[in-house]
Every structure is written in C-alpha cells, then in structure tokens.
Length: 625
Image (cartoon, rainbow, N blue to C red; front, side, top):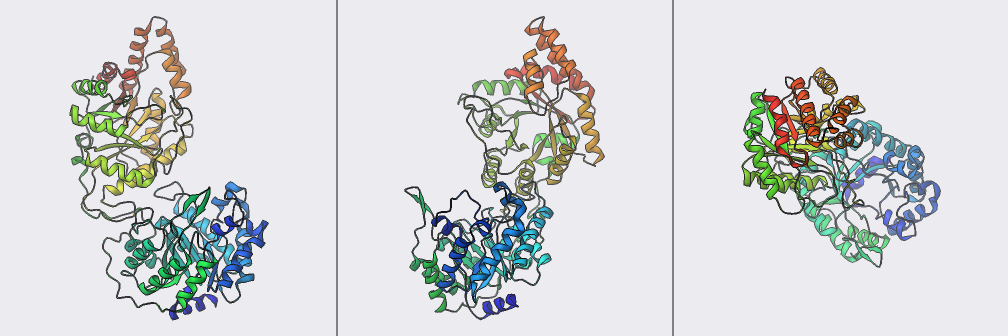
C-alpha cells in the first residue's frame, strides 16, 4: 500500500514535500477573493500546472488543492454542497501528474472556533472533517496532511476523524506557530507535540505563519519530547507589501540552508508553505539529497502536558485554585448566601473621572457592595471600563464588577487584558459577548468578534486553574469571581436556556440578568434553569425608568428587554403630571418588581439612570424592607 511505502520512505531518509499552492495560484492571476479549492472543478488545468511544476522540481510528495475544501469554508462562496466533488477532483488532478510522487490530501482548519472557544461542538467539527476526508480517500490520496492548525484541540478532532474514516492512511499533523515557537493560541511546542503523538499522528510538524529561523527553534524543542518523525514547512520569510503586491523575500538558497538545518535537527519531512516556489523547492530537494536526518536523543518527560484526551476543556488544576469565598468580598457574601447589591455606573466621556468617583462614593456610602462598570457598545469617546474600574477601586475603596465583552478583542488579547486586570486588583467579572457599536458619534464604527461569552468563560475558568489558552501552566492562578449575563426575556427561550447551561458548564459562578420589568418572564426563566439543575446565584438587573420616553426606548429599542404595555401606560400617566412624578413612578415600578422577586434572587444590580445614584438607592431599599 502507498501509505506503508510512505512510512518506509520516512524511515529510510528525508522526504520532500512541495511548496505553496495558494500563493502560486495568486501569482498566476487568480483573485484572492475566489475559492481556490473550487478551481479543481472550474479551472483544473491551472491547478494541474502548479502540481506539475513541483513534480518537475523533484519532490517526493505533492499536496492536493483542498486546504479550505470543507463545508464551512466553501459555503460563503456558494459551494457548500460540493464538498465531495471538489475534494475528489483535487485528489484526481494531483494523481494524474504525480508520477512516482505520493499524493497527500491537504486538510486545513474549519475556519471557526470549536468548543471550548466557540459554539461549534467537537462532534460537529469531527463530522465536518470526516466529510472532507472521505472525499479525499475516494479520490485516491496516499496520505492525509493536516496543516496550519492554530488550535491543537481542533487538530485532535481532525485526527480522530481520520482514524474513523481511513485508519490505514498515514497522518501528518502540523501546527502553525508564532515567532516565539508557540501556537497561535499560545500552546508551547513541547505540549502540542506530545498531544499529537498520543492522538496517533504518524508525523508531527509545523508549517506556515513564520519563516525558517523561528521554525528551526520550534523544531529543536519538539525533538526533545518525541521520537516521531518531524516535519517543517516554513513560509519563504515574512510577507511584505510592495506596490500593492505581497512579496516573500527568502531566496531559494536561504530556504535550502535551513532545510539542511531542519534535517540535522532530526526532521524527516521538509518542504515549503506560503511564498515558496518551484525554485525554492528544487533547492530544498538538492539539500535533502545530500543529508540524512540526525538521530535524536531519548525524548524528555513533558511537564504539565495536560490533558491527554481530545477534549482539552477539562483541565485538572496545575496548582490549588483560590477558594471561591476568598476571591473577593463580593464572592464571600455570595458564598454565605447573603444578598448582594451593585450600582451600575458608566465610564466617563474623556479623561475626567471626578464625577464618576463622586457617584461611586455615593453608592458606597449608600450601602452598595460594589459598583458595576459596563463595557457599552456606544461609539463615543468613553474611558475604558477596565481603567474606570481600577481607578474607582483605588480612589474610592469599593469593589467593582467589570463587564468584559468579546467585542473587538481576540482570544490572546483578552487573555492579556485579564491577566493585567487581575494584577491591578480586579476580582469580579461579568463576561458578555457584547453588542456591535450602533450609536454615538461614530456611526461607521465596526466590531469584530473572535469568540462569544461561552468561550470567554472557558478561558477565565482556565486562568483560575493557572492554565493559559494553550493548556500550559503559568504558576500562580488568577482568582476571578466569574459572572455571566442572562436574558429572561429572550425571544428564543430555549436557545437562551441552552446557552445559559453552557455558560455554567464553562465555569460561571453567578449570573446577572437584563433589566427586569416582566416578573413573570424572570420566574419562568428561573424555573427552567432550576429544572436543568443549574443552581448558580442569579442577580436581577433593575433599571428604574425616569420618563415615558425612557420606557418607550427600553421597550422598542433595547434588544432582549421586555417592558409590558402596562408599565408603559403607568409611565405615560405619570409623565402627564411632570418629570418628578415620572421618576417617582419609575422607582415605584422597580420597587414592586424587587418585592416580588427578592426571595428568588441573590441580589440586585441597579442602574443609576443618568448617573442619579440616589434614584438607584431608592430601589435598593426595597430589597432591605
């Protein structure tokens, strides 16, 4: 069988892979916004041309033009239903020109985050990989090459899929790394190498993202923890723009010199990724033919390589976590079953914090346990919620609850933010997905969401166990009191309950609801979550209305907030008597809601409308009556 012959070839010497497919197609005039994988159907000649160039360069293996040919990546281009045809065609095109070379079925990441970072489950991910792998096998590939994976957990699902669909085919599993040698999720090479070995990869390697120098350093670290064959397929250096074109500057000679170093380090598979051309690959072939791989010393024992299963979301703590009641004064009250109270204050516009500090002190003097700082979506020049929270704690001496949302931050950025926040004294969090900026001075402001609140909760839960995104221990754990949002008035109640379940499963320790005006909706939500066995404390969000216009805005323009018609009618009647009467009625409506629900909730989060803390404190008094 071809797979056995490939493994025999690896055992005897060095195997050379081809170079870039995508950048070669781009150089040949294919626009970058096209689906390169679909060219297997519409322009097979140009794909065959690229394969032929590499075969003539003397390579041992060519990869199919199927890196992004999974259902999720093909769907935006309108080809989601052609997974089988595109992958089979890619394998057959490569087979037609391979000659004596092996054909490797190229499989890249799905293009979405899977659990614990995203909503795609590991089972869904595995099924998507199985669909693509089955088509490649049907097309006649000899090997499977999983490449450019940033998340080792996702690569684990690809390996599992391959073991189920085509257990006879050798598996090459390659992570993509940063300049420091870690994966783009921060997983050290010592960690992902050992996991990939345990999961059954036949060859373990790194490819893409960096040039040869950084890849050599990673390869040296990988060789210390495994005896499996290693692979290295670097980019031709870091890309740069020149006259609107993307240029890779490493020469063929430079790439060949590093191929020799890879082999001397113990690599048995070398090749190229983005920016490498047939000229680069021909030079690598020449270097490989002159050398034999060096034997590596016995693999070292890996420290903190947790976990060893495919599901990396269940991490045993590297050190003893901080007990919940010791994380903050707020956590201590929650642990005792005492009612908690926080007043919500917006960050100030600009840099002047005097008014906000004054209101925070007013909240403290009024008996509030904490001040809640939202991270709002309004496109205005407000101070960051994190800076506001830190300064309030330092200047006023009251704990804060920091709203931290996923908007405009990637996972690594959020991890850095939160480690810094803990060092600055922040202990209480409400983790939310966040809304896009839709109001304010900058209507064209856009938003980017890398993960949602479930993924973020998983991340903070890991930090509390002293594990970073990559699953490596960083020593002393954080001690965050993890809160999440809940929406009793969601249009799709079942989906909201399901998401709440997953937040709890990810590590949420308390929840804060959207503003409550419909007590019946809150009771139905609490009944539903209790029926699922979810017992985490739920804090009711309360926003006292101050005018009829405020009531109409909350009813019609704030997603997820349910304001009954009866409440709007009461505010309309009060408004006829003047603004003071409207404020008084809004407070009374809020107090009535608190009286009805206070036996079922863990406390209140009360917004200070227009910064009027005295209005919020009138509502708080209802909890103490």
